[in-house]
Amino acid sequence: MTGLLAAAPVLAGLDPPYWVETLIKVGVVALLIPTTALILGIVFLFKVMSWMQSRLGPQEAGPKGLLQLLADGVKFIQKQDIVPDAADRFVFKVAPMVVLISTFLLYVIIPGSPNVVVESLDTGVFFALAMSSLSVIGILMAGWASANKYALMSGIRAAGQLIAYELPMVLAVVGVVIQAGTLNLNGIIAAQADFKIGPVPFPFFILTQAPMFLVFLAAAQAELTQPPFDMPVAESELVGGYQVEYSGFRFLFFFMGEFATAFAFAAIASVLFLGGWSIPFVTYDAADPNNFYHSWVFWLIGPAVLFTKIMLVSFLIFWFRFTYPRLREDQLQKICWKYLIPICLVWVSVTAIAKVVM
Amino acid sequence: MLAVDTPQYLPENIFFGIIAFIMVVSALRVVTTRNVVHAALWLILVLAGVAGNFILLGNEFVAVTQVLVYIGAIVVLFLFGVMLTRAPIGADAHLDNDQRPLALVVALPLLALMGYVLWDAWKDTKITEAGPPIVASTSVLSDSIFKTYLIPFEAASVLLLAALIGAIVLARRD
Image (tube, rainbow over all chains, first blue to last red; front, top):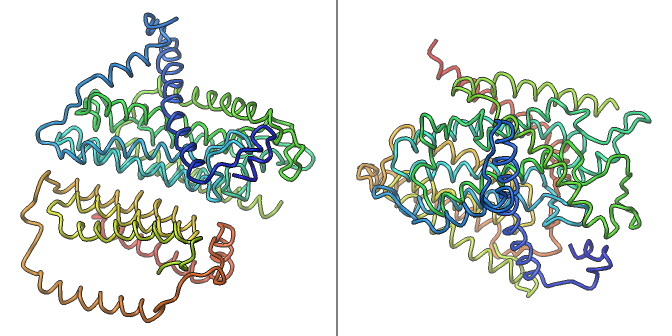
């Protein structure tokens, strides 16, 4: 990080001690989570959803009802924090934090530009997959500790679904990783900016990994337990599933975790398949300090480019969410094991062969 | 096994101490708690401690694998199985049975043996800078798996596949 900081003349003089740096990073991520959850909630849950369903949506709070979610957040914080009598108090209380911590760790590796990243880990996308798998534990804890049969059913359904969909997600990433030759997210973006077949540049991996992109989106949707993969929270049969006993700020944590994770998955999808912060046909050269991507202007442009791509991917995710009916439990498992995983395996083999041949 | 006692390695040693303490306490709670689900949750802390120690040793990839495989999959399967069958909230009186002495006969010699082997292999050795590279990058690790140790790796894969198919064959009734 110190070396990277030196690249920007504005911040060149800054070299805080390790613990200050860590505190700043934790603070930034802690701010990002509610912000991104708010953005996705307002734009998609309220505005796009009501537009797709031909209704007005919230109108009263703030201009055009834009502050509705903020008002809801304040409401949730004020509400009484109820713990059911029969519940396992400690596990019940900790469960939402576990889900939120999993989200928190996802944000650590998302790069906004070559230099704007909390921690550019060598294991990059692998780290993201591992951390996203932690949220299942929070969901199982919540489902079990609520001492409610609907919640328990939901926890079990969630575990079955999340373990199953973890596989197509990992395999979809493997295709990209083979093509890029690195796990590091900045490395994957650089590989996309450089990728050519013969003389023709292919700036996005989505052009060569299109099936993987669709599988990744489906798996991300399932990991978020959003419709059409929302058997675990199916409100018409499980009355909200593992969230049923939660109120106040603990419910808010689940809500924030879901939307912030949606944002993080959209970010990872845009990094893997849409080139992340890179602008198509602008060449990236990691070694050249005068490269446009290393200029300090790009500290601001990079995150903006990434944000645009994230919003595009989020639109796809929420489009599916608002328009498809819920899958039955057996259909849900069937789609995963009989369609998504075989598609991935075939495409991984194709990618590996192409990589060796070319 | 501590790192060298130079001020440079002091944070590593402190964090190792903290992680080791958490792991020992959690490991004891896994076997003493009166609730199956709690036991699985304590186990998560033990496994997370292992991952933490891998990070202290500079091996990020192994640490992440530890989290993905053990915490994200194996403990989740434990919890899944426990919740599918019997997982009451609160203390469960039927967790212990009268085979305790027998378990002690197995466990104590095993502890002594493994402890002795570890002590005998390393004694007072401390991790130094002169030793093998402290930070093993992902590419170094993958090179050693897919070049140096390719055949053992493939053999282990085939063995696991055989176990998997065997489990499916045993579980299927038709």
